[in-house]
Image (cartoon, rainbow, N blue to C red; front, side, top):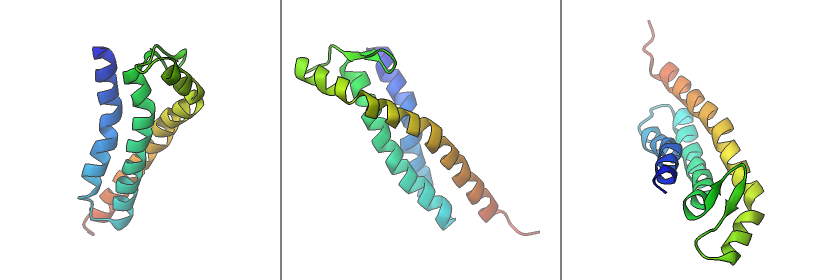
Length: 113
């Protein structure tokens, strides 16, 4: 259980940090990317982390033995494509968007020579 808690913390922390850091950006485009994208990333993290914490198993083999009994097992099993999709979108889309926002902010705040 401790491994799942630590994994979910390190998996989800960048989404929360993106919202917090994005509020301080001076470029409107970078701020919009970080705050809006960070909020979407938080939702994606919640979708993919809750089954990890409430059930046994993993993303590849599926989850089972969920807190809440057979009804929760059935619901998590039927939502598994959405859970995997949320995890993939978070990893494959949010990281490049964060890097793009950082680049925009760096170029925006650079003083002209």
